[in-house]
Image (cartoon, rainbow, N blue to C red; front, side, top):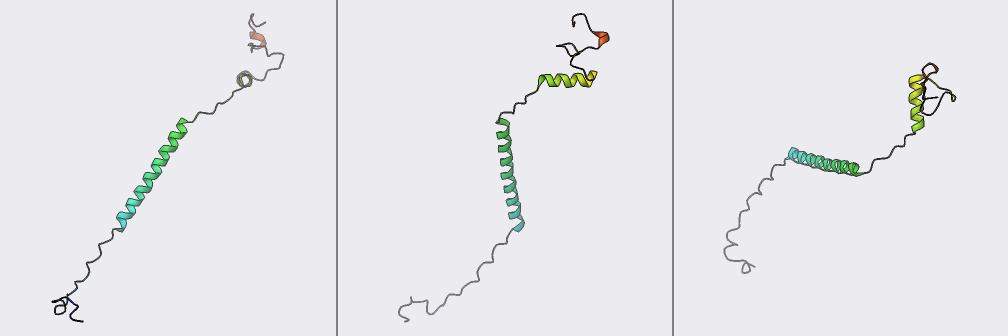
Length: 101
């Protein structure tokens, strides 16, 4: 069996050195890095959502013109009866101009 080994190895067994110590783990640095990565992804998502919302068409709002005018005149001058309502003439009896009829 000794003839199978290389000469010199059988007489001088190698001394194994202890393994190098494991590198120190940087726990906090890893957590900070992951936190910054998550914040970056959230920021990119927020920017994308804002861009999509800005490019969407706004909803059209229909305003009833007659109802708005009636509401404004009722708030300002009080409730009018249908006889007193004339097209374009919302005056009191004492101040009806001649062009209102």
